Image 1 (cartoon, rainbow, N blue to C red):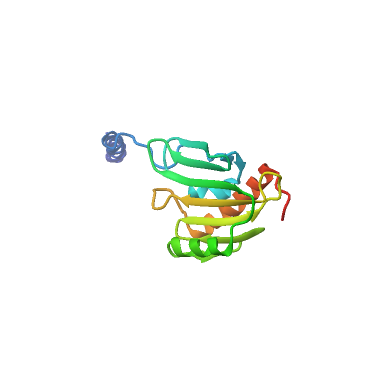
Image 2: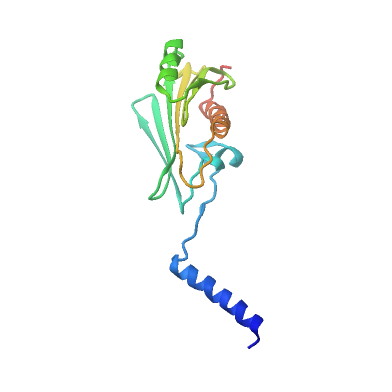
Length: 180
């Protein structure tokens, strides 16, 4: 056997041995990026950076009382990607509520979200109040918590803000909100 063939054969054998030692475990995201989160259509570009590596993505939604919905998105047997609380209100949250968010969120700053009364972004949290204008909800309040530090996640403030803007717009459409 020529020397070159032995080297190629040895390299191939080493690669097979490495795969056997590591258990052929696949890294990265093995699930498709969903088209909807919590029944709200969002673009892949806005959602993808916030999703951790793993085999399968789970979503669960549940009502909390009559006017609040909680949505959790996580990797099966793994970390959460995001938690979203949506609250239907008979009046908007106040400036006092905004001050509480600014004090309670780590490294909080006011940010601009279209049609929001106010929005506050912390390191991996986001609170906002926006108008709705339906019979059952004058306003909506949102609380987002993003997974942080998980493999595959790029939950920068910019990525989180882009997702929040898309999600809030989509949720307002789903709810039939008429107020701007």
